Amino acid sequence: ETVMTQSPATLSVSPGERATLSCRASQLISTSLAWYQHKPGQAPRVLIYDASTRATGVPPRFSGSGSGTEFTLTISSLQSEDAAVYYCHQYNDWPPYTFGQGTKLEIK
Amino acid sequence: EVQLVESGGTLVQPGGSLRLSCEGSGFTFGDYSMYWVRLAPGKGLEWVSVISWDGSAIYYADSVKGRFTISRDNDKSSVFLQMNRLKTEDTAFYYCAKGVWGPHYFASWGQGTLVTVSS
Image (cartoon, rainbow over the protein chains, first blue to last red):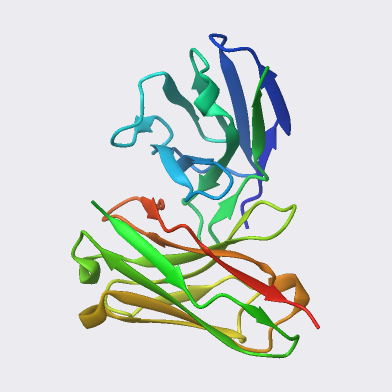
């Protein structure tokens, strides 16, 4: 099973600043990685798939990078509506599909 | 617009059974794999099960294998999760999600249905 580890657990960033979220895989997963945004009471939403491809309708301030075992989600200019929990998810080595434990992004 | 609507969540006693449903619309349901993912209180997302577009391939997380059964009815654009021998640790929001052709990420999600296992 591929274990996904996200850091930090909580991130507090001011509006307009850049937020950088990290995700590490316990083994090589190529670029088979997605990022999701989850707000309380809402459906999770895919932001990025294949490590760096933005999903339809996702603002360009969200970008993904990385391959192999190290991945990053960057939000270039934080807005208040970006407050959420963000999860990475690997789909290279399945079953099982595995998620990171999440990063809670707070807006200062 | 893709829509997924889950139903069936409720309070159930340990050892009990429950059947969750998820109805899809806005897409050709029978063309896509469908997934169940759960979110337990204070925990992160956990994949539960997947069923291929035609039901020929099915997989489960070890935590539910032998207790949960996934199925689908493409004529009714629905996927189901039969949950037996429920445990307190199965308490969670359960989401269904739609796959895509190619990479196995979860492209669209429902709002979830809450299952509470408690005496």
